Length: 311
Image (cartoon, rainbow, N blue to C red; front, side):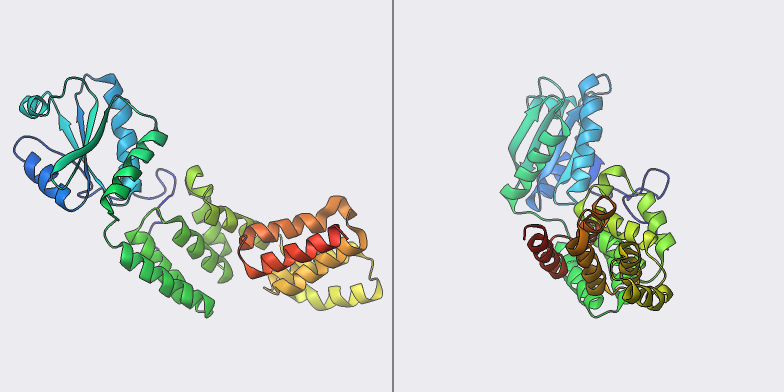
């Protein structure tokens, strides 16, 4: 399997920056900056090896530019080696950053900025230029195709398309989350868990990935589908056996019978909402996290739960 982007260092090779980030000088400045800016914004970072703040700014701005997925480019110019460029652009202190679009400077700043301000700076350039990363339309089209395959139950095809999207759009957390869900639904729980465990903490905080984490936890705690008939029979003989009803809900969920699992948990809440420190309600909250807030079953179950709790 191809490496999944977003893994922790050492878990996968870093995606190449390609033409997004490059060093430039007098001989290539016109091509790298002025000509290239006719297509999309080009950020020029003027720096020097002896400059302390430059050592803070450069890696931070590289990270933000890479996250923009090609909507902007970054060119780095060492002023010690390119004093003529620095003189022409009147660079008096470093780090200095200029942004070019359509062959002319449109924005800039001096000094090292925190990452949040760098993100705002880059986003402002994207908004001003109307730029978006190469292949964005193709990625959107592929996402729609993958989503359609998943909805139709063709999980293998959907997973393959999501993987192709990740190869083109390495930090697409939505595609990654959906890819992991496909693996989970296909029964590849261990593989999905290995991929998730290797992700950077920042990626794990993305909503689609956090939602997958909840689904993974539920899959790990679910009972075997074969237990359903036995648990059902046991419950018929003792309707107030909440422990059995809770186990039945887990088994139903593990069998992808989501609506029936919900019914059993809501029945526990209705009969004895405080049972086992509100275990049934807390399990429903896990379902909501796993399915996402816009899932129709999440919306409907929240409504039914509220009706019970506030009746």
